[in-house]
Amino acid sequence: MDPLSPIPWLNATGRLGIAILFAAIIGLDREFNNKPAGLRTNMLVSLGAALFVLVTVQSGLVQTDSSSMARTLQGIITGVGFVGAGSILREDRVRGLTSATAVWISAGVGVAAGLGQWQLGLLGTGFALIILRLMKFAEKHI
Image (cartoon, rainbow, N blue to C red; front, side, top):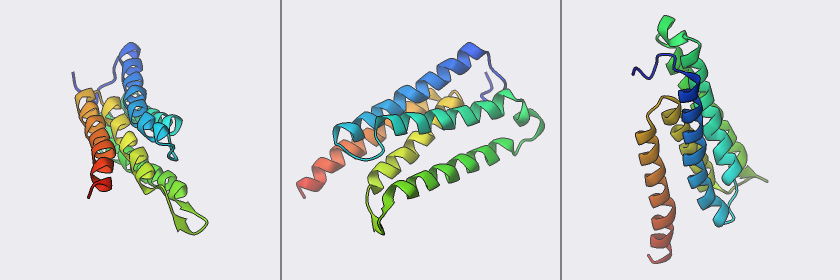
């Protein structure tokens, strides 16, 4: 099935659910470590990214304007960048950069899920967890 063709609503619901589930895994790591931008933030960002992708697909815009998906993705990336910037700049100090980056990754996972590329979303989630967990361990011991 072409990921850019409109899909049945049950399939769309599954894609949104996958976006939420994968981002929850990333968000739980942030939550368990008492970091900003935890479970709800990651889940909502991923859901939003998947939803914007699905709106573009379901509306048929991709069929009539081949650049519509590129513009949708640009909007998601830029919008999530502003969310991340807002979460790390507090009182003229940069804090929470890793959490902001995790939110950005959650948006990517949501885009993958929205396009029906759940395997890519799963890989992104897995690699994010490896980086968040193993690199934290490595930083402490280096």
